[in-house]
Image (cartoon, rainbow, N blue to C red):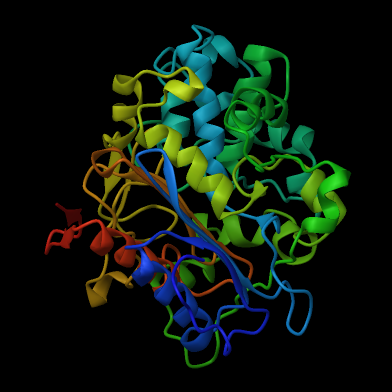
Length: 409
């Protein structure tokens, strides 16, 4: 590290690089371990294509091995951004039209009807946030079962008429589109068109050679003193979308996260594996126009345009805003909205992962940012660990926070 940082109170220590001027980010990263219960984590920042922060620290398990420069782990819904990017690349190649009728590509999908499009998968408006047929325990690692269940599922609403976060089904819907267009799996296309192109340590469907580097996930569970959110209340009501998503999707999230079978599977909404360096490089390429991935700036600019938004997401029960496959800034800090927010730049786009990981691009600031960790924290979007690092980065770049819930220069 270029900056002097006392890490004596951080179990496992902190390693990496922090460019002069970005000391605030390093200090907040350290404080996450000292004050906010961090176990193991990494944070990476690119500005103008240059890596200015690349830090890692803590331990892979309590009292276990230290986090190292090449430690990787499940990134949960940050995976959705990688999956969406594959669809955009296929459209850029002329192999896919996001706005053409989905029924022409996937006629077996009942919900496709005569108006559903691939874009509706990307912006969570297609109406398939869950399935009602009882799911087996291995549902999420059995793509054939998920495909058939989704094909037979009546949509929960008329496609395009409502927004509800497709927490797990997003990946299976998008993956089937990729398979029908290319004949290859999502993980294969992502590896060839994104991971290799950018030289990033990011995997959808992890090969066995990388298993020794994987840090296990420590799942967050609400305590008796934690307030019950609208989502938690909905999840307790049998038959709601939240209830079906949580309790009718097999046991991957409970028993499969830290298993070989749970990591080799391609769950395009949830089990991408990497670290902050990989995620920041991906978003850094997009923040600089997308040329490294064969995309043009106007295409990338469309990622920050809201194609769906709602005051009450049918799944998450909070206001949400989505571009085509990406989360946009969401200011839900009002006490009646559960404090579930993502405070980023007004033209930024990215995605959070369960427990508080996040990656995003801000083209205005030429910023690619990522924070990932293996001890989950509370909240549906960002908790204090991730948001404090986002805030420190924007402050370092001379931005100011506004009452509208964005960082602006």
